[in-house]
Length: 470
Image 1 (cartoon, rainbow, N blue to C red):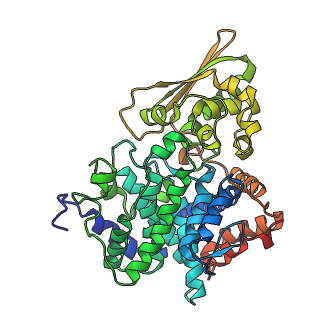
Image 2: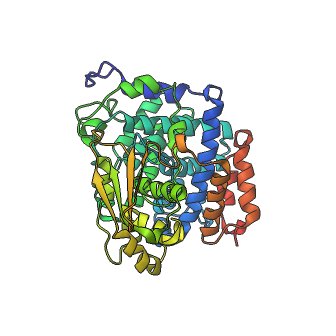
Image 3: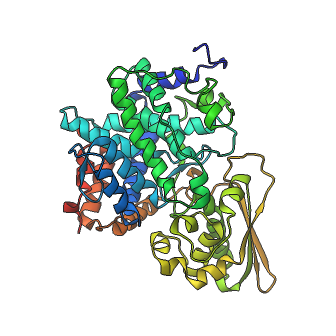
């Protein structure tokens, strides 16, 4: 234990040993299956992200940082140095607010992790060191373990953007695993990565596209950290619990080792991931799910509703209780629960096109329904809890219906079916620019299903280029 670490539990050492020692044979069948599920899901949302209004600008900027043929920018086929490709693809994955989430941690681990891991794997293949599917899936699992448990170990409310901060550590952990680092090398890489960690909640508050950029910064940083560790450099050893470590600086001093001690190496955090059935802030999904359930059960129509009250935990109230405003930006609208729920009432869906144009964002029907929706705080003491949420609907007739949702649609306890997973992937492929051809879509599904048998995972990102699209 580092002298600076006053905790009796060596948090860094535990993570480093887990990352260095875990092999594919140690990963449960359930965890492998979930890794494949979220691998496919993340590829889909990344491809759909090429339709984001800022995607071309991000790629244009990344191309100015140096030429290279190491890795693929998804959807465009542009070849970039691995760190730049990780940056560009991480932005795509998170840009639409459609990527999966670890709810307890409030972390989107796949955006940083998969963008960095694929870019690095492509570069390794070019150097004659291909990464196979077993290595890749193992790296995914240990990376999500780190990102998820970093978030689960704090009771602090969000001050920094945890999908970027903890998510970046998850990406660095995954790369260290795939690179075959021993525990000392893992510790060095993670310590180096700590010096680059960034991302505040101000971008979320403002609905700024910088939210996706913060994910991208940390994906790129993970690749950089691995490169520096391989070159023999080291970082601070006590980067988590030191007096100026991650928990002190980024989590306001909040740290409880119990989740890490209880679950690291025992409960794969990848099995705790929730799908996003809707491309909006996950904290808005409870309101939509409640309306979906109540309208399905009781048969009332949207125009019969007089008022909707969504009773929510503190983090939802704080981050999704923003007012519905005229002419919102796409990013703002996705993070405004009244707008998201109003979209569902107006259109019977919440999907990528609903946030993609001024016409959709200024739809009078959406804003009229949004005006009927309000949030009310509950008495949940957990500053990171997303659920339970309670949705109460009062009709114009005076009738009232309510539902309490302990597990929101997409949570492992209310999971999407395999058919729903594939439908989401197909829709995402259709939203890509250019759209993904059905034959390639099906080929990607088949490749991910047998990913543990793939000998060079760089095969997959190479397929995400215009030659496979129309």
